Amino acid sequence: MPNENSLAGCSSAPVLKERGQHEVFCGLTSIIWLHRKMQDAFFLVVGSRTCAHLLQSAAGVMVFAEPRFATAILEETDLAGMADAQLELERTVAELLSRRTDIKRLFLVGSCPSEVIKLDLATAAEKLSEKYFPRVNVINYSGSGIETTFTQGEDACLEAVIRGLEPSEEKQLLILGALPDIVHDQMLRLLDQLGLKNVSVLPQIRVEDEVAVGSNTYFICAQPFLGASFDEMVRRGAIPITAPFPFGANGTTAWLKAIADTFGVSENTFKAVTDAPRRRAELAIEKVSKILKSRSVFFFPDSQLEIPLARFLNQECGMNLIEVGSPYIHKTLVGPDLELLPETTTLSEGQDVDKQLDRLLLGAPDLTVCGLGLANPLEAKGFTTKWAIELVFSPIHFYEQAADLASLFARPINRSEKLKIGRVA
Image (cartoon, rainbow, N blue to C red):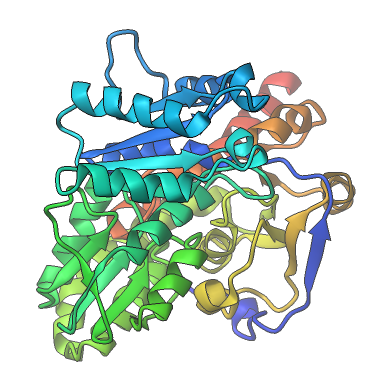
């Protein structure tokens, strides 16, 4: 049920802007879930050996696996300007496409090294697209970790895809954001039950799943970190639908209701479709979140999921919010969630790690949501932590995953309580 303290909202609350030392993964990490979702795509990172090691370790690639991503490694001669990097790239792409005939979309992904030496991957992508058309579409985007967070890799990828979409005047719903397959299927099933037929999702699984955009396209984001993609859709003339993100029973209902109202779905139909799963979700959350009620939580900025998740924990699990930090706050996207946060919530954008750690010590939260780099040191100091990155890789959207989402936060507190009992014994 909604927390009474959240009714005033904090959409107009001041935001603490921080531009100091920050700790996040780079945007290349998003390739790990994108390459699984886009089954005819290949992601070629133009970067260093460090980029290659990051992807290998993040993906856990086995010796005999043949993943749909790789790194075109910039050697010392490339970095020193002693070799023609463009020619080397063309040779690498030709070799790749001759060996992997299943590739329909090739993403040239920029990195910190390729951007530092000013390698023009955008022009390279245009030339390669002309060369290999219509067999392969070559698209460029930046996955650089310079001043970005790791979820922005997906945002940059979808923005590049949207720029190349064909125009359409057909009335349709377009949903932005990669979701785990089980969540993706549940979402489409709910929308179908509401009577919506002309529904597309970006990223599309295969290039044959044609997606177009125009002035009769209505779109909504399923992920809160797609600010650039949101802006590009608006630039293309599409009409945005904004709502709280579909985390928990309330968030999912509000997200679906915004779509239903836009497309004229009757109240009776909406209730018939959503009442039963909503009630199941509410009961499941209530059971799991007993340990969370009246506990305090502190969010370090990491994935841009922080504001919708804070809304869920406060409104549906009864947690108190000490600080909600996010790398970037796109107020149009997360505005509906901001309106449901308590007006006393401290909001911060960006990061200055040392200052935020000072505020953490002062607030002494029951649970701290943070990146991997901070979790172990904070645990050593006696804080109970939750790895923020797990929330990106886990199925947490919509009704059927609502209890699992609450469990992800309840588990570390439960573990900490058991350890305390063990120490007393």
